[in-house]
Image 1 (tube, rainbow, N blue to C red):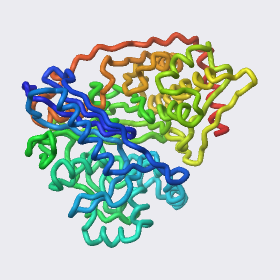
Image 2: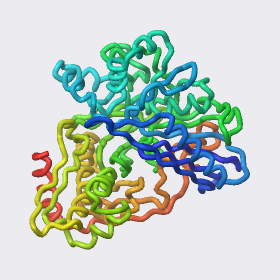
Image 3: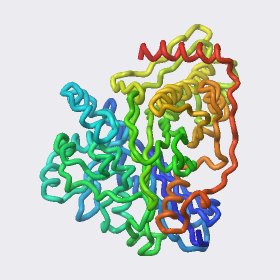
Image 4: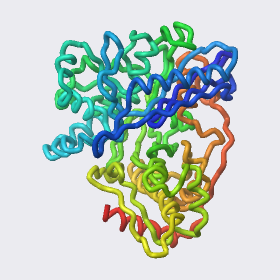
Length: 489
């Protein structure tokens, strides 16, 4: 890289982070703004797209003010995936609430399509399963349920896109309606082998292809800015990737077999599988990791819907803690969970179970159960869900995961990281900088500008390593209790 700066915009489920990196990948400026979430009905989760945009502008302004002098050479964008925004092409105004990836309102439609034998068609082309998680089901719901939207779609008056697409539209002054291959691969409408929208899948969801963005590489001269406060007109947007793919890139998982897990609102475990899609036999997802000038990489993915969100629920729903940071000390105040097991199916169960009808349970409660036991059981649940993902992934890939890189906000919890090492029986590697998602977006942006390429330009990050300490028989007892609880959820 040169002395020019790279701006990374990380638009997540609970807020937006903006980081300004210098040529050594040190953070020169940081901004963050939370965004509200709305739950208008059981199983529904929505965002205000205008609030998302305001959070980007505020985070950007804060990061630029901290960074001081220096031109922004390029912008990398990473985003909460599957969340769908619909906006007017003429004004750029969002015309509906954004339907968030956690939303389950399309569960009945997905179940009906599975009963009709359509899931195999989708899995073969997209690498995905029929689940409310994915964007295509949400677009179809909008078109079916919001008056006037089908007519607007047919006339070309509206555009659909994931959050990256909406942000690029706004950043470019409405000049660019694009998405990258990694985000497109999360829609149920995109053929991951042909790397293009699939006409038959669009027909099955009755989604007009003309309303969808043009699909581009994850790195390159993708778009330019126009009329954005704090950014010079013509600043290149040169990197785009969905948040989990960006984290895989940011963690340097560039070789087949490299794996990482991001602990955020949910948990997302990805393994690089190389230059060809690897179909899963264990109901994991095959997905595009990224496309750069050096080629296309694919990944296997397992998604847990509720991870950090479980801690938020203990705080906001049960009032067991006042802040998320309190849970580690509370859980550490008891030697074990006292027989309590939590299955955090607050939004159904994701991979490898895919049970949208499942509901959360807390079992094993006795008169001696205290808040600390529930807190410890919550951390164990976050780790146990990932054990299911790793074991399924190892079987699909035909190779063991000998160590797992981790990132995301919850990884600051050392007790949770030790639990993960114990229950998996492998080393957990936590980099000193846990903003791997934003780092990946920045690195993609640098590659897109030709400022960085290959392993020589990878940042060298310090790391903490958590080694497994649990005896095998104790691990098996914990896993047996978990399997029993899962069967009840």
